Length: 238
Image 1 (cartoon, rainbow, N blue to C red):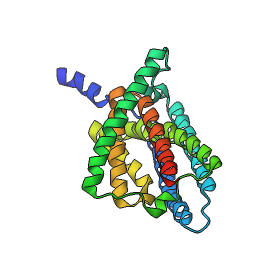
Image 2 (cartoon, one colour):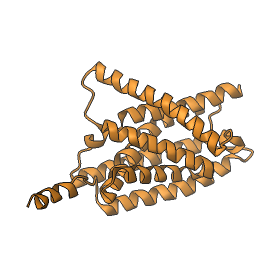
Image 3 (cartoon, rainbow, N blue to C red):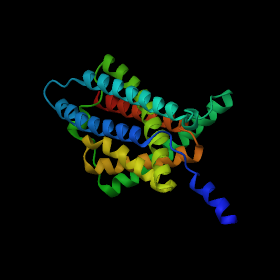
Image 4 (spheres, rainbow, N blue to C red):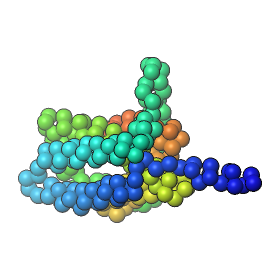
């Protein structure tokens, strides 16, 4: 009798953020973008790379997917704050999330350094170097794109997809891994070893989001990491 009462509670522990068809559409769009993004990046290795086009297209695609995810959640009755977290109500809460993001960025950076050494991941290379900004306009767009990546990618991968995969598998580690695999696959243009490394990075973001029950520290760390990588490339090139 006790078992029959507890069983439904266990089975309903994980709730989906949206319906399965919605998730399939999101994954299909991500797959299409991964394919198209690789073509865009390959084109950047030509004599006259059009980075502005890549930045703008990526900017609009990520916000479009963000809106799609939020709309799907609202249609299913899942509150968006369940993945974004409650609004900041004090300066202390803001500083706390910034502090968590900073600690995560340092620790994850050290882990990635070791993993990169084990995987023998070398420097970015000529093709990847062509992605980074040149000039004031591109630097401005890069910063905007870094913030966009932080907000949209953390919401999509760690907030939405991770929750969906956890609900599907009824297993937290499996959901985190599946979301990380999807995150790595979207970066296929960087090559297999980097995809593996990025997937591991995504798993670390996934653990952070699950432990904090929101994606705010991940958003801060992700946006900072992307912006810093562009700044370092500009400084070392000059």
